Image (cartoon, rainbow, N blue to C red; front, top):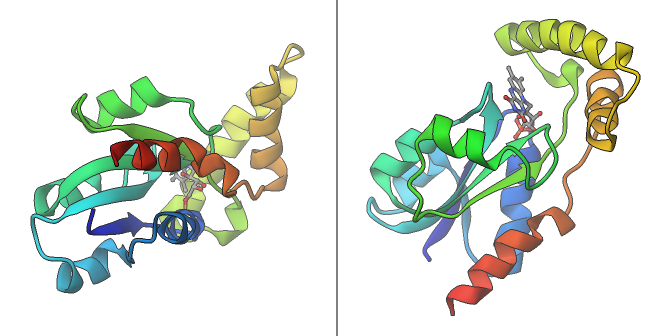
Length: 168
Ligand SMILES: Cc1cc2nc3c(=O)[nH]c(=O)nc-3n(C[C@H](O)[C@H](O)[C@H](O)COP(=O)(O)O)c2cc1C
């Protein structure tokens, strides 16, 4: 494996990429930087933040590099939404996919993203707030939406590090 390459908006995906780089002893670059530093065709692990189900930068990364694993960083819990994300992003079965829960804070967003999430928080947040039989996952999601939340942790990368170690 040559490198870890990522695309982040508010920093969670960058944090995960750095944590993973330390764990696996691999260099870490944003997709923008990588274009000058990591030769096309190299084997990489790609991490991108999730926007409306899409993993930002994945298509571009897959054109440039041999993507050996993908991590999508979103506000949903780690290890959930795997089928939806795989289908939506057309990630082939042979490529392992992981989802990681990142941070969420409307105040850190700008422009269209802030507008979109304000609408989402109003609509989905209201729906969840009015629900009387919320699951623990839904409680967590509501808390993230209303209060913001920081969920980046090394623990969430466990499945990714285990997969990597199983290669050798
Ligand atoms: C416009 C917008 C759309 C989003 N859509 C999703 C989504 O479909 N699923 C999800 O789990 N998280 C979604 N999120 C939450 C982000 O993926 C989450 O906050 C993530 O931690 C952001 O990563 P970053 O800090 O690297 O930018 C969305 C966020 C924004 C701003």
